Figure (cartoon, rainbow, N blue to C red):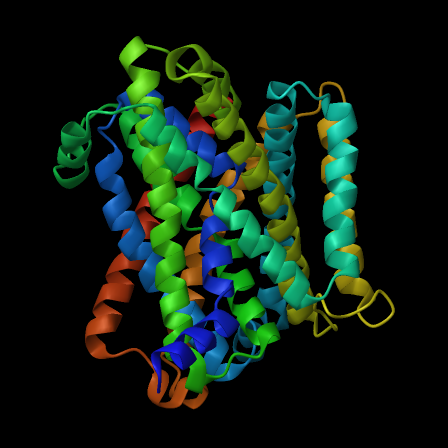
Length: 411
């Protein structure tokens, strides 16, 4: 096969892996990385290496199942483990993803206000724009828009360079762990993994591969797409931490969210760095507000056996479109309500996602080792050791994440 033909095939298949991984860097993810850099400088950079490995392992298995079976993860769970277990999982995921979507609209509102635009104008405008995009656009059109928007994430790379970090120190801290035994450090270590590997990602990736019609003969190309996407998302995370560590940590500035980071950057790294940070936050928040409700619509409709897909109309897939519409509309309304319980919803979302993630991963690894489903594409023995080891570590860290999230919230 010629080099140009190989490139053409890759460009036609690429999308699901890159989009899924990059949009994991939504408003809550960017906030986590910003706080980590501002609080501990470069010290937490090392966590991105094991996190990237874990993300690649899990996403590769999910993508392989989508290409081999042509079905979404909810479909496979329902067919192999029953409707009841699937139904309760879908209810919990719906609650979690509603909270995540609210968090993304909160990020969109905050970034717009940094740029001098009222949230009461931009929340309805953003909600209507993304609703129109999904309900009126085709899968190919929506995918192209999302891939283009993923490029805006590189604004964080530019912000990091403009901050002029000490690169020798950056790379030393990335390679050599500097572990601190205090509660905030441990919490942020867990939060970095928790915000990078989420339940909705697994469902969205497999559903998008199935809807795009990628077959097992094309899987090698999809695998590159997945690995590339996972690598890019953590490169972006790396530069967010570097930016905040170089500017905010060195000045002793504490922040609680990404919008505060964008404000604080202005006098320290210049107006351009601040604007780039804010625009990138707006982009990430809006993309998260598109994909998380879309993932929710996919897996609920798969679980219930309803028609689904961006290429469908309201008449062809009413449940799919109305679930998407409800999540977008209700999240936008919640953000504009005075005194809305945003902190409660975000904490609830994090806890429910944390509880569900181990179940989703155990289902996934069991399905990917099902010879009847996967044939010759089941995990190898060595890959199973890596997969189970990754999942056990994630389960332990997720348990700690839930505990450290709930206790501060209750106190």
